[in-house]
Length: 321
Image 1 (tube, rainbow, N blue to C red):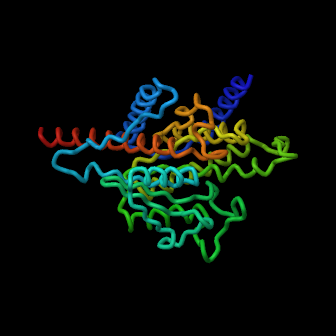
Image 2: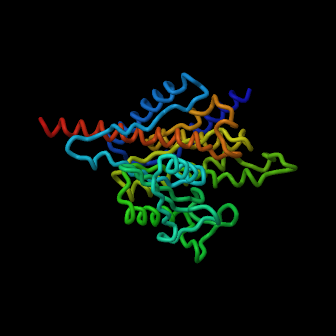
Image 3: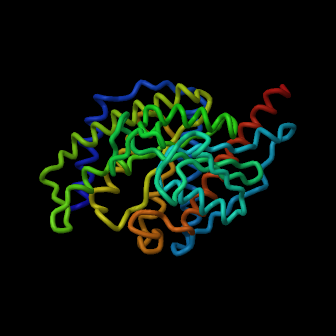
């Protein structure tokens, strides 16, 4: 019954999104990269899940580009939230990378004890993350986050361009971008509690989702304008322990719809973890644990380096003709 209801909701959303479809224009190689990720990730996931209790994908350091070592440099910038911050921190520690905290350089703030802007450098790989408070252009956001002297770029419409500009000045132009900050957009759901249970009667889920689709489309347009040559994508989230029947399905439907309608590449963490007990994947109610962070990081780098190597080979073959 639940599965039927989810398919009905998906059909409703697909019908709704067809009326608000984004007008982003993507080049052929970006479309090819999206299809490459779809095929390559699925193959890796299925191969690694022969043993369902093991997360076995390893980061391959053997990729190279003849005549151009810099062509293999992965520079990934993630505009996300605490799920992505944990991933970068875990991945960097396991691979003995160098941390660079740049929140003060960009005049960004988040909360005590957690970095809002962080980059990890491991050899040819740079992975940066900037905390986004949600997809809405302006605050106040959840927990009353808004523009203040310590964080004058809290508003998403300001935070994205200032974050990209600051990141480029410090770490170069990213060739890959992942955007996903919708967990902060879930606060209307988290605030609809009665005696510890969700009170869905006051929530217009269709209106909430439609609004988030619109704001996400505008945010992706902004990113595409600022980084026209980057490969832009998103990722889903694992099933969470608290409010899973609302939070995870809504967030992940947004990811699937965004990827399909805007031509984005998609890393499907939901697919990767759907057969796992949440206790084996999560460190708390919704953040993936260190083992899965490493798995996800290895997968990201593996796919991106494979794509860069394929692109290099094709470019070398063209230059030799």
